[in-house]
Picture 1 (cartoon, rainbow, N blue to C red):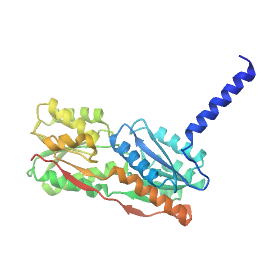
Picture 2 (cartoon, one colour):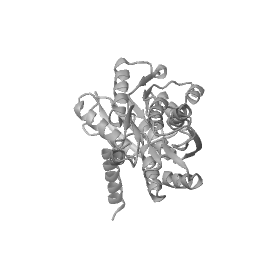
Picture 3 (spheres, helix red, strand yellow):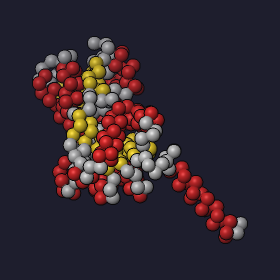
Picture 4 (cartoon, rainbow, N blue to C red):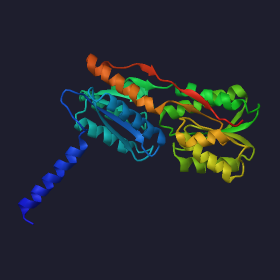
Length: 317
């Protein structure tokens, strides 16, 4: 093959890649909004993505949507690269659920400096890190501590003072992980239960399964496992079953993904929290579109928009 043929083939391949990267029905008069999520292996974020796509389809005359996510919950570097790609693509707005509350702040600042509206959803960026960079980013999301406390308060109905419980939390670098742990601790303190351990399950099923198995082994009289999300709760339920303790050790979670519905129904899980993944990104997208329409100074955007979080109690007591 000649050099010219090889060059033509390379250019054609590059053009195809570029076309695939562009959103359908791209239009110069419609803003492009990028939704940057955490792990799409987590049903919560798949539900979020589907909700956002459905919203864009109904509002295709108002904006274009680009959705993307990383391979797993701890892939902070991968998420930073996604934001960098969106900056290069010159999108109008980025709606982001950060994998790490501090590590994403620097690239968020680069996006803002590039004139891009950034809206933070799901997991709040660290206020001190934002202040250090001299930026303000609106947060649209639930009160995680309040939601976790609701779940913990419901669990407390089945506990007595002095009962031993343990907490499996998300990534310690995520603000929502810390807040949910605090909410669980608030509820257990009120109930008089004893929190004998707090360990990270990194938001993942397999990691939480191993952590839960170790906790059950170390504390044979453990009465409950409080998990920072439903993926970890699924891992904990499996560990409880393997230990032959189904019905003796209660498990609660957070997110209300569809995979836990049968567990809630038959009592393998006692409760979870519904934070409406299908709507969470939509709230952020609508905030971004409003900000673009109003042409608000990007560096002065800020504030907090609370979104719903509801207790979902299990059917079997």
